[in-house]
Image (cartoon, rainbow, N blue to C red; front, side, top):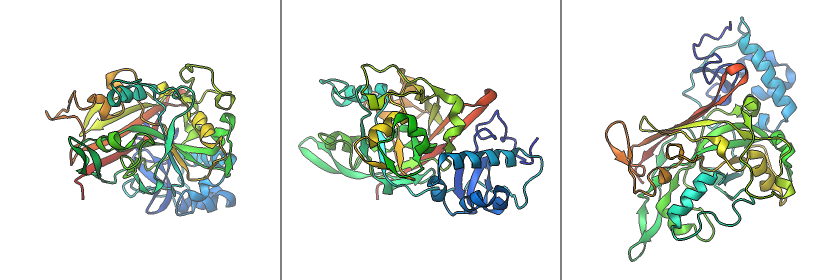
Length: 391
């Protein structure tokens, strides 16, 4: 029995006491408890002097700059407070609707770690060439994205404009092949450092969010050779408003797929950091895909090790994303490029309409769950966005 009066604050629901994701609302830093939020500033005295200052901040930035022992201490104290029968002095539940981007995004890196997705895209974009390029199974392929256009779930996405290939040369205008990519993102924290080993990666990952890497496929197909994505992706990347702590996913750890070839030593893991996350993609209230994260070729520990092996630093607030999550079956594809096979196979929605790519007014919602302790369900907060016409 707990003092929190919310029917969704149980182990059977994604945001019971087993999850406790962090976010920021009008009242400051909060944790999500079922369908409500618990602001932490009014109960800061319940945490002791060392933690009180962190939970009283206006964003999660100071907490991200701390370290894993302190993150663990805070989570343990939170669990005590929310499962107690008596509310701490000053506690009052608040609405989720005022949630905003909870941290200052530093660098943003997007990876390409689903072999199924990479093979599908290769077949669509390079039908006469190799589906996978030679480096793919040797290193986590990625690119440095644009941190300034990372937006919180619920933010409308304006259809981007740019160049695309025309019959008689390039043409300019709004994208006509606007797409999504269902991804999982990792929010970094801890001391600034470089050359992070796979065994130390968890000390530099505070938590996990869902990501929608909106993608203009017609712009991408024209611009991406030889340097990769640019304007096709830099206009908007949506992230969930609530960060699920990495500790909440301890029971979701699984072995990643067996590498296709021997790995270089810096990419070898001494512990498995694959994650059994079940994603769900909804397009205008129609569930169109259920991508399985456990099939990803590269883990976040390998991605972080690769990202920093050249001397690049990882800092609190840095964000890196997994790349599109796709499985071997059609209903597991995490992008509409794949679901419609380049626009050749329309997707039927429950209202009777059909789609290949996004139309103005379309709404996409991505959710995910993972197994927790003792049969509980751990949630990753939804990432949602609605497409608006080009400006």
